[in-house]
Image (cartoon, rainbow, N blue to C red; front, side, top):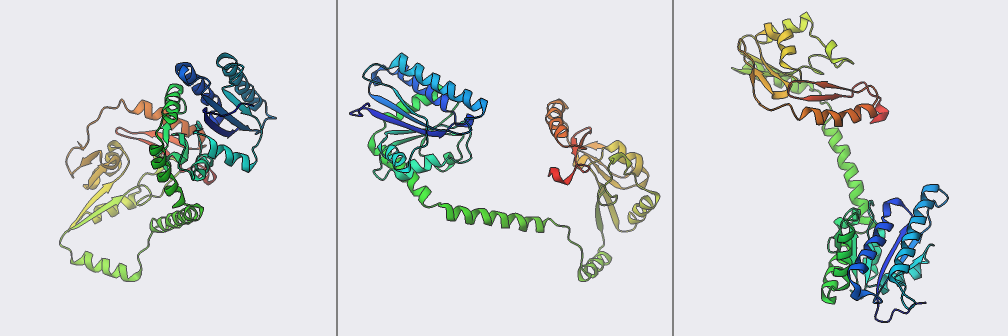
Length: 361
């Protein structure tokens, strides 16, 4: 067995999983050694990989890649007195894990993607001596809390190698400042507080859902509204079309106004009233069905506007070169969501999912 002596220790522990970026980590260590020969025989990388799904072919293949990379590093850069990478492929007992956390000089935690990553927090919490450096992937959720770590891009081998060098050379005073800040943060946001915040957010969502529910006028409000309506010298009626004046239908083209609705709009547009129809429909469609009503109209939710007996005017001017790339993105969701479809308008593109199953969200 190798003795530590004056050698620096880098430590990593992770499951055998393609999201953990273990091979990238090894490549970064190899790059670090290749470009910093002064660290040869002065640093050891202890890598513990916990078996996971190793009966699956792809995971077996991933383990073989890791094994080959380690063998390559040790044979190319090591010697009879120094093995750069010490590799263990088994779960570590808790006391051994804590010993490695507290005994290493640098913890290298660089997943390609991770929801939080408890290993990083465990390392920080274990360092009561206020020594040691955490190199952490920006793709780990914990990076938002542990911002005093050296944050790296786990896909950039050279950046990771530079971070290893910076971490090994970091003064102890700076190590202590960074660790104290991170320890204070995780101590002040424990699992109990996290759970309370989580449940609080759930309650807030339910409250917002209730706030957005359709509210019907009670009798008192109806009476008050009618009194205010009768007393007003001028009245502006802003009316939506789809879902308000006309119920939603499976095919938007079928939602045409009937004679009764058209007559009602004409009657409303008399005396002290100004009626404005606001719709996501395009101006040609609105003109076709409501052009004789002599009312104000707004098309495509504000893109075009029309005064009574006046031509349509554009409220926005924009090129249409944005449509094609956006349509390509939206087509992905059309394919994923059965019975949804895209409607292209002059100034907008609409994704209709009213016919989709509720089970699809």
